[in-house]
Length: 484
Image (tube, rainbow, N blue to C red):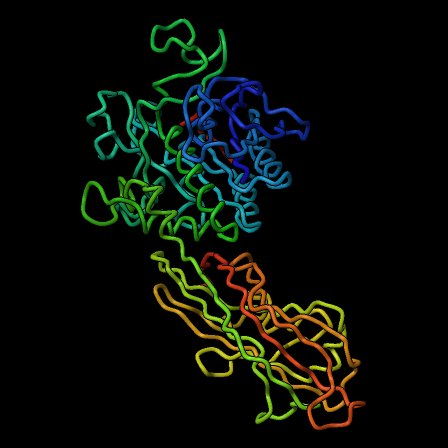
């Protein structure tokens, strides 16, 4: 996973960060620190674990892509585009302002979300700066209309971080009410989606004479700081949790990550979701543990000799049986669509020999193969490509039994002695990927028949490898720019 820190740059030689190639907004490689802020954000997300120095981020060792955001809305948007184009999976944005939005930045964020990237932004800090309120900043406020994840700050004692919370830092608090008041009610649900600790954060600092900590007695090592704070500190922490989720299920999109974070947050402040803390303080352990996991097991079959053709409903041959179980607690079902049976070996005549094939779930036909080639049987299409529901969905805590059956042509192209293999490999945007239910197919003479007429002999043997996967839900005027 790659987390892009879109900020004022990162110390490119810091030994406690796993850095990948960085960029400047006009396209050149770079991303080096122009200020102290980005290096601190990078450590919150991914400072290296178990290297005997410094600190650890919420996603230790994750690759950090430093992207310098420049000084204009155009350069901010260009920085987002560069992160998309150069392979970042997660975009962490600890900056913003209260004031008119930028159409360029909004378009870039929408492009990132449409491209499957996880995009996070801060709720912003107040009332320590103009307009001296707790308004949610831009672009964090886009959370109400897009899948951007808006992150606010909490105190060490699970309060909304305010100018009077328990941390003893009284000059700022976490933004929580809408930038645009709806129907006269400032508390219209446009606050943060979740919050994360935002004070007294130990993290990486620019090295040597640069950085927040140089020349102060706070820490003996000037390459680190212990009091990085603000929603700027909260946002990359949550970006790190998003990286943990994607490491378990690379197929998740920004909306799904937002949903998981909210569903697994620890409720604080007022019961239920509230404007100040959203769904609550994030819980990384619960979030990762909640992911739907699927395991599949094939069922062995005894040897049998098939006649020359099995081309009618009564003569179909079940070549593979398997179960998929969902062990998740994330309210995300496991979609089975598409399902692919890969065919390998030396036979190479499946397109001719298999007349048609069936996928059944819990004893009911789900679909006939939409494609039969020498390499694969395919059931269904790419998820949502046909604007239809998935072939089959497995809800949290349940399972389904599946069977693949084939019907053979009356005239087989396989020669006596040819061999091939059929094995199940469910391909669903990374849901489950692995060979399962290995079946050996050899063309041999049928019993009590002319030896010149080839039949098919199948010997299904169990492959007890457990395969794990993960569920998916198929279901410019500008104010003062500031870091958060």
